[in-house]
Image 1: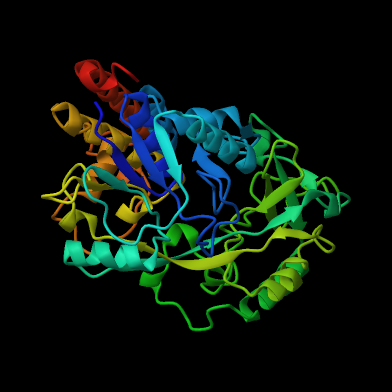
Image 2 (image 1 turned 45 degrees about the vertical axis):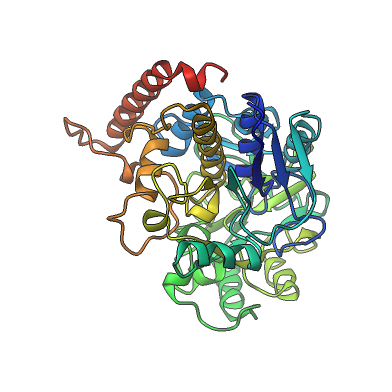
Length: 441
């Protein structure tokens, strides 16, 4: 097939989409505005840059996120394979060396003879077959063009990223290596233990620190999975101790006891030269981040490779303006990635893959790819394209949106295991029924 497909945005969704189309013999013109135009969240001009955490979440098959990764493997995802090739220790999660990962994806795109990478900003909707993966930081002009075409007002929410510190500046006499409960992969995290006095001092300074956006947030403005740490703290003095700073399963080697609270640090790269403050997405000003976060034991002299940032993300009202393949009805244009409201790294990869498969199906005259709703992937798409959905908000994949089991299972772990088994069978069966689509996968 000689028809060229335009893909806008070389993030996770756009990179996966371009590589999948090229694999099936479809020439692609992939537009990426960086470095010509920058965003508040990106730091490089590489494809598939991870702008927030470097974690792609759990790998267990009895978790919705782990199940989604398994399904993407079965469907032939390029980026999931690249993530695993550049994994760094993170206990039961898949975390990646963000630079190695994005460099590998960029190289795969630049050296693919069927992909033309164009470094310029797109201001209008493309002509012909296209997939817009402009991400939650879609340029104003393009998002305006989308809003005008869809006839709906733009929706938005606030998102945030956590700071990253230099490993050589940590005080290792206070910071200790341990994973909770000494589970498999013990020692994958560093822990900064706090006693009660240290925690109270940190808490008081945190909630009183200066913010970039000074006004109080309405709950609807904040995506719950990425709430700034200071906003979580405002819900109660012990909110962090039962959340990101929970000390359960940890033992401070200096005391032999569980600390009052603990900040966990996760490696950013294979060399473990940089660490991410887990759960510390923030809207504090940079000077305040340096001042307040240095109150954490072990971080008194920490140097910050990157401070946390907060930014407005944009997405469309997908259930009411897109069809079940994320296409704009009556056009050859699809949307993919977080602009559709499917929130999360793996979810973005998934939507890019699905957009590629359905674009290929259109060009080949094949039936659309509609995944079983009993799979984690299929349930997310069903949620995001269900016109009965009201007050649409960004959603991670989760077992709450998967159709219930025919025979109820009371215990949660057993119920999730049953969801997973059913989903794996459904995905395997669907792939087997569609050699026209997955024969090249």
